[in-house]
Image 1 (tube, helix red, strand yellow):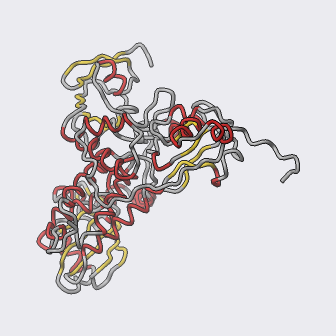
Image 2 (tube, chains in turn purple, cyan):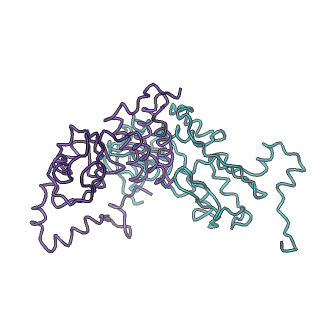
Image 3 (tube, rainbow over the protein chains, first blue to last red):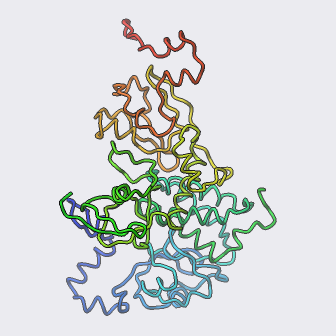
Amino acid sequence: MKPPYPTTFGLFGLPTAANNVETICAAPLIINRGADWFRSIGVEGSAGPKLVSVSGHVGRPGVYEIAPGMTLRHFLDQVCGGVIGELLAVLMGGAAGTFLLPDEIDVKLTFEDLRAAGSTFGSGAIMVFNQTADLRDLLKRLGRFFQHESCGKCFPCQLGTQRQVEILERLDAPHKDDRERLLDVGMTMTEASLCGLGHTAGIAVMSAIEKFPQLFESNGKHHD
Amino acid sequence: MTDETIKLQLDGVQVSVPKGATLLDAAQQAGVDIPVICYHEATSPNGLCRICVVDVDGGRVLQPACVAECQADTQVETRNERVLRSRRTILEMLNASVNLEQAPEIQQMMTDYDADDARFPDAQLREAEVIDDNPFYVRDYEQCVLCWRCVQVCAEDAQFTFALTLKNRGHDTSVATAFDIGMTESPCVFCGQCVGVCPTGALKPKVEWGMEQGWDADEMRRSTRRPRKRRDGA
């Protein structure tokens, strides 16, 4: 049950920092080599190396350890072997991430710059899509993922991930006002869910509505 | 709770509450109505339905009033646009999954929050057959909103019987006995507390169900009789 959150009531009922493996792996390096060495990698505010996982239409997909501060364009072109074909979108941060358009990839890969651009490192996943990608299909897959992942405990996520996937599955022939339905479902999951899964289950869909509004128009095909 | 009191603003009105009070406690003290579905004063609050969410200081997410403790010097809004959108959408999504015909309190909330009962066309209803496996009550999980109250009173909140649990995940979640065994084979002692706390028509006394079905006196007697133990051991 949340609240309370681990930061105030965690292990043994005491405030608890829950760190991921990446953070814990950094600790021995900082102890052995010192904080100054760690800070020399990356930039102020995003110090230390950052692991990202690149997939999709790039020459060399894979897991990279980068020094924050380079632009996404530099990273894709100079490190990942370049975008294959013409870039359509980059999904930053994984299934609960946000889309960047081709004219937005000059953003610097730091926590602060990404946040200012309305984006995120999130899980560290960077998915690259060229013009051959079917973004509606991508959204359907994301919808199925969250429907499957929802534990079913709180109403917004249990019901919202189901309503969301129902609407996404009919994106090719939507009902009138499906866009507004997705926004209400997405915002309700984001604001009212119990845990982080529900809080983020509508983020990518709402980002797609903002960045690719044409995906949510009917193309002449309509349910009603 | 201690003797310490804290002050906060609730819809612009200053309220003083004991430290440890929830936002729902504060609202009840101030006469502000906050709707609840899963919350019941006899069960441990779990913050499941989220219909009681309120806006605290315009925070990143809304807070469930039933479990969130009052924080000193905060501004709480119980009916702003964010709150109303979440409440309305939760009701509309719930109505698309669950048969709420026999849940007058939730129906009243639908009216109060301007919820459209046809908001989600072609939505998947959580279909279920009525389970009539004992002489005391029937279970119609098509009317179940998954408030967990029945599971809780069957467990540590009252009876310590643990006959009920949850099966499946996500939208397919359902209340069930372990391994779906019949209620008479389960640890159930037929105390009736689950029926008492059910906020919808999902759990219903057998007699009430029989009257709805139009059973005559003989049928009612037959259906509500305890099955006689068979001596042949079969």
